[in-house]
Amino acid sequence: MSGKVVDRYEERLGLGLIEPDPAQREAVVALDRLATALGGWRPAKPGLLSFLGRERGVRPRGLYLHGGVGRGKTMLMDLFYEAVDFQPKRRSHFHAFMAEAHERIAVARKTVDGDPIPLVALEMAGNPGLLCFDELHVTDIADAMILGRFFKVVFERGVVIVATSNAHPSELYRNGLNRQLFLPFIDLIEDHLDVREIRAAKDFRLDKLYGRPLYFTPADATARAELDRHWERLAGAVPHGGMDLEIKGRRLHVPMAAPEMGVARFGFADLCDRPLAASDYLGLTQVFHTILIDGIPRLDPARRDTARRFINLVDTLYDSRVCLIASAEAEPDDLYPRGDGADLFTRTASRLTEMRSEGYLLGREAGRRAVSAAGDLGA
Image (cartoon, rainbow, N blue to C red):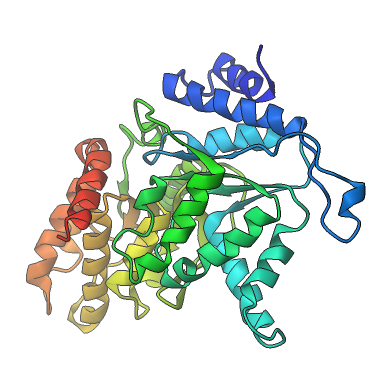
């Protein structure tokens, strides 16, 4: 007997919107079971009169879906969230949720004696309900330091959580500073959520890029229209606004962001005319698997600092196997032909050429695994 989540999945298959995949179907069945369990559970309302509204049924365990980029995790979350008949429910990109938490904590510190984190957690959790998180990932030490305390309160409040992530819980914040203080959060995840890997056969998102040009020159209206089409194909036609990422205590503004789809769009000046470091670019790769850049200019010796930042940007995107879609005033070899660092730019030009190839896209997932393994070995 199928439920609403399975029915919605079957409907999309029937319309040809998605392709059948055994791993996705297993996850759909698990989400369907959870939706059914939530339908039979009534949490007790918090407060002095909670005894008048006692909990009905067994509180369901949450679900943690992890797997590589493009395996359909966001699509599955869409199906679940639309289908589940339970209130209150809230869905957030994990980074946006944590940014709100930090803002509330900063405000609360001015008026609350002692630790404000439990109070903020109670405020954000609200009544016992359902929280759905897209792209749970932890790269910022500020997040890592509060997550255990924050979510201990959330779980004690009776909230059920469904989350998607690229990483198994045990891999979160790997090699991070003071990681031992983060380990209680991993324990909470494994205590309260069933962990399931989605081993889909292929990267469905990259199917949207295969065989299509990714580098457009000159950077004119035609090139901008091509990037617009890529954006709609990857992020959807619904308008997406900007967002701020917190990276090592600094805020990096992303002018156009679809974090739930792993896609961001920048003008060249947003990334290379500002004093950004390699760590800022690395932070972007933790959130976005595809980045669009409009208007890469020809660079001359007077803009050597900009050129150096562009070299760092390309190196970081390349090493992290991020997909790059760009418009530029010239082909890669002609972007910075002379000036301080022009010899290094030869490698950058080579990488820009490779990054527009189908071979780069096909090798992207394997490259991500290799980078992750090297990090685990302390490389």
